[in-house]
Length: 113
Image 1: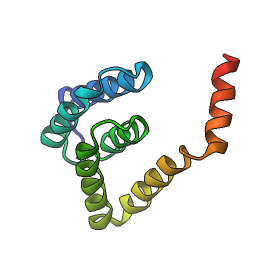
Image 2: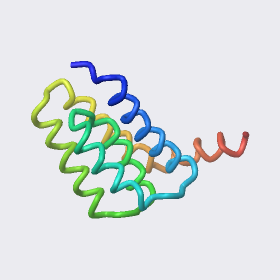
Image 3: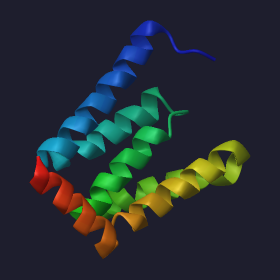
């Protein structure tokens, strides 16, 4: 089912807000509200939840919200075989980003710009 243009634009706006928080490293307190909105208005979208989970994991912010989102994502994976692989890879990517090797490469790339 394809969402209406208005509904799609609202979802894209939520993604943009999350992207802005990730890039600016400010506004973490808004992630809970953004996630609640996504859950209420776009319950089939799991990717935004994964993005919020990544930010919370990386920043150490709002551990309770992070747990709720992890529970939601695990539920998505358990009930949809197609999405299971994607969600599992999302969790693996979060863990990979914590590895010293990744951090060193990422920091060198950032310093080069």
